[in-house]
Picture 1 (tube, one colour):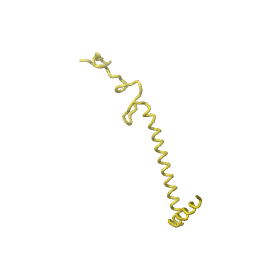
Picture 2 (tube, rainbow, N blue to C red):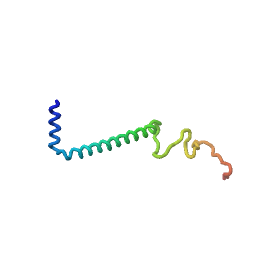
Picture 3 (cartoon, one colour):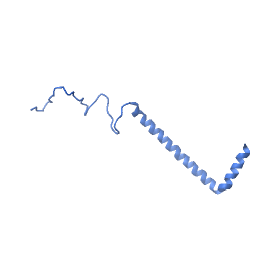
Length: 93
């Protein structure tokens, strides 16, 4: 088995010349560093997205709804058969 490793190393040196091997190794190292950084970023994005998915309710992007309020401005929508109410300071005609 070790004979094949030696033959492979000699073949690589002959094929790519000794001058280019350090440059190739440096380029490979930089590529691996970039790959690791990108995969780390993807994992962080997944972890950040999990709490939003855990609520079970789809939400519009950029809009967080607090629990217990529905409708606009925290006012619950009235039912269609409810009598209209007047607010202080308003006049009803």
